[in-house]
Image (cartoon, rainbow, N blue to C red; front, side, top):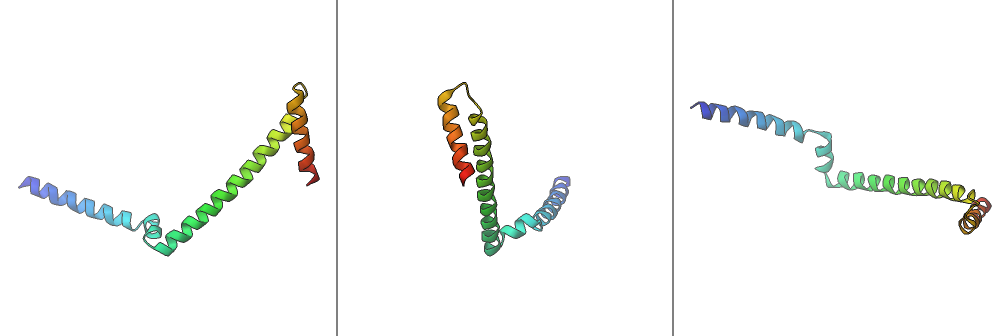
Length: 89
């Protein structure tokens, strides 16, 4: 009999926890297809923009650093040419 009472109490706790999780904002967003599509679209835009900005900064810094390398003639000239091209644009 004690097992049944314990089981009923655990089921009530589980029910309240599931109800709390279902009312969470993340679940509410993903329960609606239009909201889910809009959320994923905005997420993709942010990811793409961050990737482009990050790659631009990384390539610029790398090109600048490599252009100052004079002890490796091939890399130094190549990087200096890249910096010249970037400065003209």
